Every structure is written in structure tokens, then in C-alpha cells.
Length: 191
Image (cartoon, rainbow, N blue to C red; front, top):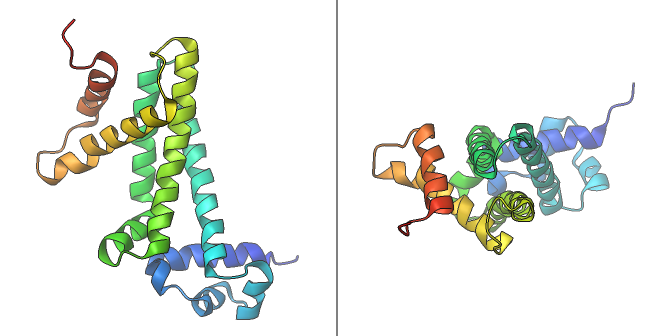
């Protein structure tokens, strides 16, 4: 049985980035964790940035798979939106690499960690944008700019779930599920 060294390296790097963050991860650490020589890493990846990008791509693919698991074509747009956003935020809070990158950005401000977090947000907005476009095409929501709408939806959801609890009693999942369509669907204008 041949050993898939590339896979070993990717798994080792993911572990190292999750444990130590981007800045503190070295190719020597990755080689040690993978049980390969440092030169072996360079046969697959030109540098740490390229290796990090590979891991970010896998993380984003996994997030997309997780989101697609909860989408039910029989449900209305806002029900699916809430379920997807809830699951993606749970995923982000459970996934060690996302946690470490967020922590590293707050503590050190490492550029590559910031870029990693931005990639995650861009992927989530991109996924929501596609769902918004489908909902517009079905007539479930008004015509709108799908990119801006997706961005606002994500930011509102994050504000209700993460930012609010920094200075208030946290909102329950049911409350968030009611507030999201209240602000986005019904709006604040009187009937």
C-alpha cells in the first residue's frame, strides 16, 4: 500500500494551522507532524501560503457541503436561509482552524489569517447570493442585487447571533429565526 504523502502533508498542515495559527506554523512542524522530510512538502507545495490556500479551499468545500445538507427545496427561502446560516456559524464555531484564525486576527492581525477569514466570508456570501438569485427567479423575494443582499443577510445574522450577545442576553435560535424575516422580509415600514 502506497502512502499518499500529499494527503499526509495537508492533514498535518491543517492540524498545525489549527493548533498554532498561521504565523506560528512552520514547514518544519508540518514535516514533523506528517512524518516526512521538509523537502517532500516542497515537491507538492511551493510555500506555506500555497499549502494554507489548499487547506482553506478544503474548508470552504466542507462548508458548502454542510450548507447544502440543510437546504430543503420544499421550504421557503427564509426558512432555508436561517437553517443555512445557523449551520454555517455552528460549523465555524466548531471548526478548529476557523476558531484559530479568528483568534489570530484579533490578537496579532496576521495578514494571511485575515485573508483566510475573508475567504470564508466571501464563500458564505457567494453561497447565499446563489440562493437569493434562485429566490428572485422563483418570485419568493423582490428583485434585488444578490451580492449586496447576501452580504447584508450574513451581516444581520452575525449581528443577531454573535455581536448582540457581547452586551445583551443572547437571543435564542427561535428569536433569530423570527427576526431575520422580520427585518429582511417584512421590513420596518407599516403596511
